[in-house]
Amino acid sequence: MADRDDKDLLGAANMNRRGLLKCMGWTGTGVVWTLSGGIPRTLGLIGEASAAETQAGDLTFLQISDSHVGFDKPANPNALGTFQEAIAKINAMPTQPAFIIHTGDITHLSKDKEFDDADQAMKALKPPVHVIPGEHDVADADNGKLYLDRYGKGTNGKGWYSFDVGGVHFIALINVFNFEPGFKSAGLAKLGDEQLEWMEKDVKGLAASTPVVVFAHLPLWTIYQEWGWGTEDAPRALGYLKRFGSVTVLNGHIHQIQQKVEGNVSLYTARSTAFPQPAPGSAPAPGPMKVPAERLHSVLGVRTVNYVRGNSPLAVVETPLGA
Amino acid sequence: MSPIRAALLGTLGIASLLVAGTPERPAAGEPGDQAAVRIDNFNFTPPTLVVAPGTTVTWTNADDSPHTVREKDGKFKSAALDTDDTFSQTFAALGEYEYFCSIHPRMVGKIVVQPVKPAS
Image 1: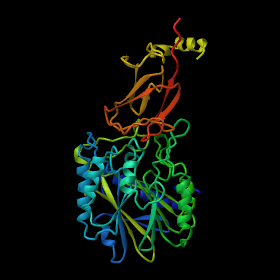
Image 2 (image 1 turned 180 degrees about the vertical axis):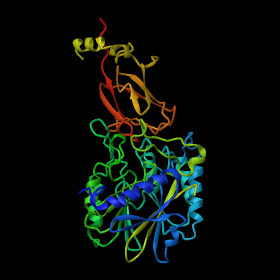
Image 3 (image 1 turned 45 degrees about the vertical axis):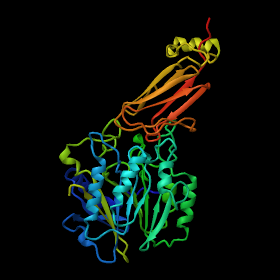
Image 4 (image 1 turned 135 degrees about the vertical axis):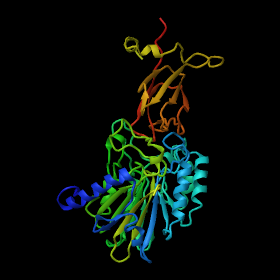
């Protein structure tokens, strides 16, 4: 896919986006986004425009990610607690989302107790919750058996699935089972042939005007190869979506907001509800990043996405836990 | 292993990792040889460890991040190791075992199981 980001076409939009993202990073203030023809533009800071833009009949869903239940190191001594806070925040929203997607790393160490605690916390959510695993959820000695026993029912292959809500097609992909160990490669994630073949069939019958939203734990574009922050065979997956007018990809894994526009495809990564990670290449290795306790809530968060029927823009709203 | 190769290993200092012991030694009453791999700063140290058959290798995670030890074809694998958790594996058969961390697949290591230098 031709990379049309950065220059010419989106130059001006990018300047705004970058400037605002930088601002968000420092202040923890959320920004409301709409997507029109694949080009994001901001509607302003939360509180100025925000969820007030939501009209009755719009489809709103919400993304949470990287809750790392069980994590108790100095970067966040109570990851279950901040996950519960995020859930309480969602429950307090005046308009409840149609559903919630958890984009993986539900647990920190794939332990039964951690899955139990996370399940118990998510039971408090009113809308249905969909999940996909992160690599931390399939780190048991049985290579993901605990996760699949719990969440794999009614899914395809090793847990992937798709569904339709309000005219939007949602695809939940899994890229934590087929890592290429870095003996010779960069250690990037892989979707694998079986899943890619399934996906090709899954979208075959859809009209090109159908908005498509794809979830996956690791980014479907290579953000930083040195840390394995990418998916080797993602171009094949995105290739199947080329003919669609509106494609939104929502990822987790890197515990910070990054985004990229490639033609009709907008890709986003989400914040964690547990702890931040360093910006790509800014530390010797990825991993939990300790910030002053009073700043922690400003770097954790949840994301709402709003789809307005008819003219198909998706508005992506970041809400820090501290907001 | 040829005597020449064993001698070469000796000159490389690798023999110092080998504790006396032969595959023929009766197991009963004999504690196995021990060797250690430290997981630190997203690395397996040493990245390649040469041991005699029957050696038990213990990995210890000294990182804040959890890691796993997984042989590339699944011959052995640990659960997720939190800080200070350990995982042990005994190597009976000769061979080379490449392994990686399934959470951070760029982290790779190798265990080489070779017969000890024949007693002269």
